[in-house]
Each structure stands twice: as C-alpha cells, then as structure tokens.
Image 1: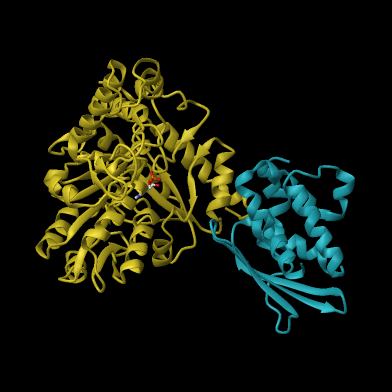
Image 2 (image 1 turned 180 degrees about the vertical axis):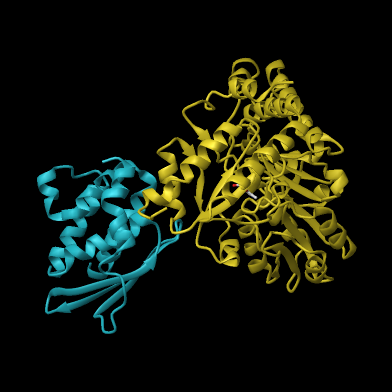
Length: 140
Length: 405
Ligand SMILES: Cc1ncc(COP(=O)(O)O)c(C=O)c1O
C-alpha cells in the first residue's frame, strides 16, 4: 500500500478516533515510551485478570503512525496472556524490520498488518514500533 | 550573470524530480565541486606539509590556496587565521576546549542563547561542568529577536566567553553580532560565533563584526562534507592551547614533552583533508561568481512567496519574525493537527524534501512550547515554481490526514 492510502485507509481513523486513548485510574502496570529524536511520547497502561490482559489504554502525542500503531496494538492484545502479547510484539517487530513477510504468518496481527509497508520507510520505523517496544519492555 | 535555470543546470541533483528544500541541513553541490575532489586526487595527491618532493609541495600549495580563499571569503586579515576542521561542530569543540583551558575558572560565566544549535550548546555544557562555571542563557522574544537590554543584562563582569549563533537554524533570524561583541569586549570577554547558517547566505566580514572566533561548515555552502573552518584572531589563536595532539602540529618533541607548531598548524593535528579543502575553494569560487547580491535577493523573494502562501492557509503557524527579510531563507512552521513527521512523509511522496523534528535545538523547542516543527530552507537554485508546487501540495495534506479541510 502506498503511503497516502495507508494514511487514508488505516492510520487516520485510529489517529483521529482512537478507541483506547485515555487514562485508567487503577492500572496494574504502566510505562512511558518515547522516541527522543521525533518527540513521539506515549504512556501505556495495562490491567490484568490473572495472566490475561483485561484492559489497556494509552495517552500521549506524536505522529499519526505512532499513535495509530499503539491503538491497533491495544485492539489486538486485550484478551491475550502476557506470553501471547509478547509473541505478538516480537512478530510485529519482525514484520516492520522486514524479516517476516509471509502473509499467513502475519495474519494474527489483524489490522496492524497493514503497517507492514513502513518497513520501506526507514525514517518511520521507530514511530510504528513505539507502542510495541514499550509493551515488550513492560512484559519482558 | 547566470539565471536560475543556468544555475540549476550546474547541480546534478537539482531537477524536475525533487524539490530540495532542506538546504539548512546541507546544500547540493555543483558538478564542479565534486569534480574538484577527483581533480585533487588525480593531479596533486600527496600528504601536504610533509614531503620534500615536488608532488607534496604541490599538494601543500593547493591546500594553502584553499586556506587563503576561506580567509578572503570572510575577510580575515590573513590565511593563518583560518583553521581547517571537519565542520562547525568540530570548530566549536576546538574553541570550547581550548578557550575553556585558557580562560575559564570556577564561578566564571559562559553566555550563549536559548536558540543555539546543540553544536553550540553541548561543548559549552561540558566546559561549564568541568570547570564549575555557569552557563548563562540570553533569551530572545518569540520573533527570535535578542534585545539590547537582554544582551546587556546577561553579559557582565563574570562573563569570560560569549558564544552565539549568527543565524538561528530554526527562526532564520540574524542575531545582532556587533552589539553582542561590543558588550562582550567591554567586559573583556571573548566572542565565538556559530556561522553555520550565515556564511552560505550573506557576506560575512569578521573584521567588521570584530568577532574573535567564527565557525562554519563547507557542506552548507556547496562544498563537500567533511571540511569546515574556524577563523580566529591571530593573537588569540597564538595564546590558545592545541585541541588534538599528534603529528603535524609540533615543532620539537622529546620523550616527555613537545613544543607546538605555529598557527594554524598547531590546531591541525594529523593528515589534513586537503582534497575537500581544495573542493571548498571551488565552492567559494562558485558562490563568488554568483554573488551574495543575487543570493540574498533570490532568497528574500522566495521566502516572501513562501510566507505569503502560508499566511493564506488558516491552519499554518509560522515561527519567528513576520518579516520575510528576517529569515535568511529559513521558514519553520506547523500545520495544525498534523505531526511534522507525517507532513514530511506525505510531502516526500511528491518529491518535496523538508526537515521535520527538533532541528538539533531542543531547548529552543521547549522555549517555543512546541514538540517539533517542520522546516523549509531555500538556496540559490530554488524557484518560484517549486514554492508554488509545495504550497499546493501542502494545502492538500490536512484533507489527506482525515480532516474536513
Ligand atoms: C546553527 C548551526 N550550528 C551548527 C550546525 C552544525 O553543523 P555541522 O553539522 O556541519 O557541524 C548547524 C547545522 O546542522 C547549524 O544549523
């Protein structure tokens, strides 16, 4: 997908109308993630039910790709166990770094799969990874 | 006198496919400059200043001619006042290390401004920490203007060094160097000027400005990457201790001690970058041929066109002075609701190169209260058509990003 279509069809909606933006009062875990060179800055909160992520939220500011990517990530990880979430984060990293390209393998990323073309935009890789990197740091 | 199309034809990367608006980061080079690098290696290559044979003398001569050209370019008194470095950053590090050793004691003040590029901030932070000195910040108003009152209130008897950008790489505003020099010299302080954004765009006269040290980069003025200059007044350079130690910068060496070569060699340790100095001479020749009258007029006219176009877009904020004459070809702005990185990516899709981010001036971004900004910067080969193309593409970005307009 070319850049303009990526914005139009995927990124804008999550950026302008994020489903998971806000702040929880009683999170079990929280962590700030920043891209110092771009100024992307997010604050990620997780709530657990046993080993399962029962809810997640983020706040922050940054470019549309960084913000949309976190929102999509949260869509995906609610309901997953810690290990499953970590595995998905690893898969997303591999996709953005261009290491995994097989569509079937990437299917579980759901909508976040559409960010795969970011791997051809080196300057934006960090933006797409911010949320996923922060998640990995929290759970890893 | 070349017109803009003839100028464009001299630059292999300036063509219909790209609109290059990131000249404050680095300019493009005319083919003559890249050819000069090859010319040096094919015709004059030997280690300058070392060999006793003809080829080495020839290399030395070419390197010396480049030094003389740089001296003339900023109206230094003589070639020995020019030290070749890699770039502005290295020039300022040399200045900070050496002046720190020479002048700074505990409790002294080093004065800079809040709008400095990191290259004119971090070297002084280190000196201040090591010597337990204070780093004092002059603060301009939001149009980038440093007032005389602010200058006089920050430069006082505790001040030993003032280091100031000639032109801000974010606001494009020219600082009142003469006034700063006057205030500093009155209290016996030395003035260092970061000329990275000035030397490419205006006739710099270091003697008229009466600055003590002046730094600039070749790659921002059509020259190669990897060659820059530090100008210094002879008597000050004489007193300053060397920065890098090693070959070429010595007079006599024993097992435990050394005496140093005369300036400028005292500051040029190791094998020098003669080929790029040679090509910088070619770049200076090119700029002289075009002339600063053309360059300044051309940039002002394009800047006015950019700013007028941006002013018609209700979602655009332009930073710095409202007067296009106060921008030195640099226009920093934001488009409401669109992060500068998204903006730069979208414009890239149309072949437009602009910068987005903090522009190596994070304290200034904090002072302005913005996280990051987009920056367009012009040079002698840009055209009205490119400006209009940019304005047209910019007007479509909010819509593409999902806003109604
Ligand atoms: C005002 C200013 N100072 C210093 C620098 C550093 O120049 P260089 O990277 O050539 O050392 C730049 C450019 O990046 C600049 O714009």
